[in-house]
Length: 185
Length: 425
Image (cartoon, rainbow over all chains, first blue to last red):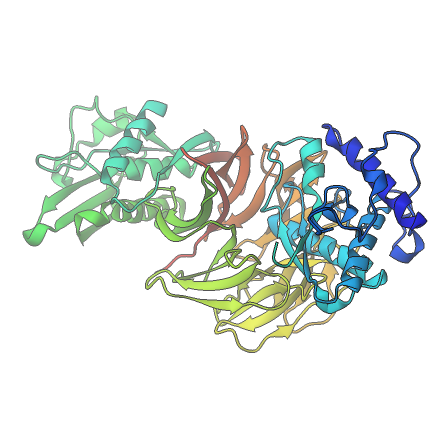
C-alpha cells in the first residue's frame, strides 16, 4: 500500500509537471538500468502534489465501479514516455506499469494492448521498429511485475499516429510514447 | 519559367481523366555545368494545341542535362526534314533540334512522328513514328524524351517510368498512388483511413508490395497494378513491414518482430517458405537487395546506433557499411550496385547521403533537413526522396552528382514514402 501510494504521488507530480508545455528531451542517463526489477520505487517528490491523486490507490474503484476509468486511479493513466531513440521504461513510470500489471494479475480475464509510438524524425521503418521495442519494454516490465504473457499484446504505430503534430521538442516528447488500451475500450 | 510550368500544369489538369487525383507540380533548382542546348519546334496538329512538346521539354529540363531554347521567334518552323533550315538553328546556338508532327488517323487514333537532328553536323540522329490513342499522348512524349536523352547523353532515360508514393489529406485519408515520373497522371492504388507505408515495386513493374495499418497493425500486402487484385504477403504476430523484392522478383526480404526486435526474413513472393535471415539482439530493418541478389543491405542498431550493414542472402555474419555519424538509415543501392544512398542525421538534420562503395567516399546530396525514403531512378542518375517544406511533406529529386534538385508537391496534403519504379520494357 505504502509503496503504491508513493508511486501514485510520483506519477501525479510527473503528470502535473507534464500538464504544461514542456517535457524537455533529456540526455539518457549515462548508466541506464536494464532490469525493471531493480527500480521498483520512484523517488518521492516533495512538491506539486495533486491532492486528488494522493487518495487513490491501484485497484480501488470509483463510484461507477471501474478503476480503469476513475480519473483518481493510477489505472486511468495510460501513457509511458521515452527518451529519444530509447526504449527504457524510466523510473517515474514504473508505478504505472506495476499498477496495470497487478490489475491484470487480479483480473485474469482482462486483456490489454500496448501501442508503441515514436516521434516523426528519421526513418518510418526504423521508427516502427523502435515503437515495437518500446511496447515490448513495457510488456516485459509488466511481466516482471507478475502479469502473464497471454493477457498482453503489443503493437507498434511507429511515427504514424502522432498525438501532437508540431515540429517542437515538446511535441516530439509527447509522441515518444507507449499507450495502454484495455480490450473492449 | 514558372509561368511556363503554370501553363503546362493547367493544360495537364484539363487532360487528366476524372478518376485522377490532384497533380504534383514541379520546381527545378540548379543544373549540370554542361547543359546541351536543344531546340524543340512545336509539333503541328491541325486545329489543336501541341500537347507533346511541352512534356518533352519539361522532361529534358528536369534531368538538369539540357537547356531548352525558345523557338517562337525563329522564322522557320519545320515539321519535316525537308523544311529544316540549319542556319536558323545554328544562329540560335542549338546543338540539337527536335521536329515532328501529329496526324489524325482513322478510328480516332493519331500518328506521332518525330526527328532528332544534330545541328552542328546537320544530320539526323533519330526518327520514330508512333500510332497512339489520344490518352497515350503524355506517355508518348515521355518515350520521345527518352529517345532524345539516350541519343544525346549515351544513357537510357527514365522519363517513361513511374513512381509510387502515399498522400495524406487533411481529413487523414491515406492514398497510395502511382504516377508518371514527373508526378503527373496519378492513379489511386489504395485509399485507406489508416496509414500506408513502404510501397515498393516488383522488378517487372507490375506489382507493389506495401505495409497497410488498415487492420490496426502493420501487415504486408502485394497488389497487382494491372488487375488491382491484392493478397496478404505476411501477417504474423507483431509487425510485418519493410518489404523488398529480390532482383528476380521471386522472393522478398521482409521484417517481422514477433513482439520484440525487428529481424529480417526471406519469403517467397507467394507468401510461402518464410525463413529468418538476420539474428541480432538489436533492430534489423529496411532490407534492400544488391542488384546481383547476393547481399542484403539493411539498417541495424546492433552496435548501439542505427547504421547500414550488409549480409549474404545465404545468412552468416553482417558487416558494417557506414561508419561516420550516429544515425544512418534507409539504405538503397544504385542499379549498378556501386553507390549506396541513405539518410544521415547530422547536427539534428536528416539528409540524403551517398556513399561510393568502391572507394568509400561519402557525399551529402540534399540541403533539406527532414529527408526520408531515398530511391534511385532506374538509370542511377537521380534519387527520389521525401522531405518537409514549410510543414508539408513533399517529394524531391536530386541528381546523384548533387547538382540538380527538383521538388514535386501536391496542392492538398502531405506526400511521402516515394519509390521509383523500374523500366518496364
